[in-house]
Amino acid sequence: MQDFHYKRSRDLIKNAEEIFDADTVKAAVTRVAGTLNAQFGNPADEAFPLVLGVMGGAVVFTGQLLTQLDFPLEFDYIHVTRYGDDDKGGQVVWKVIPRSNVEGRTIIVVDDILDEGETLAHVKQRLLDMGAAEVILVVFADKDLKKAKPVQADIVGLTIPNKFVVGFGMDVYGYWRNLPGLWAIREQDLTPRD
Image 1: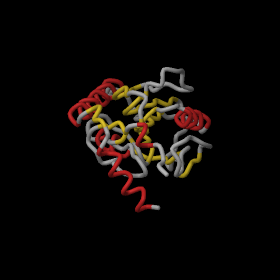
Image 2: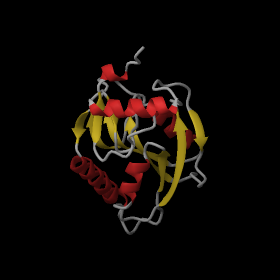
Image 3: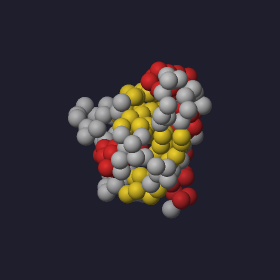
Image 4: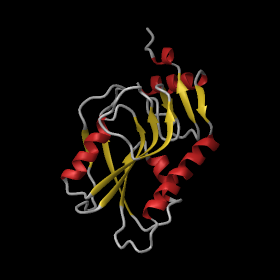
């Protein structure tokens, strides 16, 4: 099955459309960092936030974002999924919970994409239930679904069309997270073939 997905992922990218190039992606990360620096860069603040990267899609965004933040922070990660091996959402599963104490703290959750919003809504509520004082949702990409979502991101890098997008942490069959730009896979290419 892995060989099938590997070959299929190579074919999918051949017909994909680049919707944001690497320079646009870098500029979006810098804008997000600037917003966070303005919000948390006050030297008089004694408390510092806990940044939680959502693995695995947010690893690229989180890594590049952290190097541009100029305030003290603690970093940890969570692993939450609704997808498993499918591309359709299901039940939210926490694979890794934060090891750091969240009680009474400002938590900055960094994720790759806000799609339907179910997972991030669940994450935010769970962290609040664990005692977080505030949860700030930062996403690299907010998918424009033309409908209401159960949660809105506080800070967004780019708004993307309602297409299956890969690159900058987002994948197809586990591949192409490493692309520096964002590419939209054609819908007809995602349809399984006989």
